[in-house]
Amino acid sequence: MLRCCTKCSRDFPATTEFFHIVDRKISATTLRGDCVECFRTRLRLRYATSEKARSDLTASTRRRRARADVKEKERIYAREKKRKDRSTEEGAARLRDYVRTWRAANPEKYERYKTTTYKGVTPKVLAKNRTRDLRKTRATPPWVELSLITPFYEYAAALTKQTGIRYSVDHIMPLKGKDSSGLHVPWNLQVIPLADNIKKGNRLCQM
Ligand SMILES: [Zn+2]
Image (tube, rainbow, N blue to C red; front, top):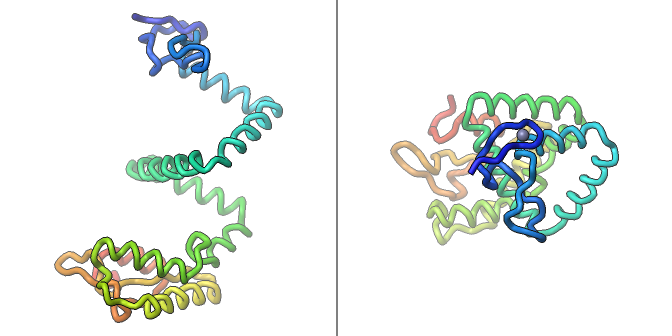
């Protein structure tokens, strides 16, 4: 069954893929007159032109986002979206542009970001989490002492703070090497600039 959009007069199948439901609380099947696309355009326009619509939306969004379950859902959604965007040439370029614009608009925040530890996590917690995660992949032998791992993360954080260049803990023999797998043990750790670590990837030598 086709349904004609009241705004753009195009015909679409009368399903929730093309028409939003008016109000789920009242009826789960009553569809809006305008198509999904027209509805979205109208909302965007309202948001862009009306200060009230903007503040209304912000307030309700704020309330929604304060909920723990919503927070978790949004976190997962954002991560998946970023991954998807990055997978295409165009999406990756758009992300790069966005980051560049953000950095230019927020120089102080960017400086702070560069010189704090990874996503605001303390080196101690970072070492603990990383060691725990690598236990699952069996890169961390059961006898490894966390107290010997943590100093590497503390050193990386201290260097980052001192120099303004981001340092990270690298596995000398990569955890997922081409021919062999390194371990998450003190003698396989070294502190190097994050950029070098990323460049190195899973290779044994720096390129
Ligand atoms: Zn339409």
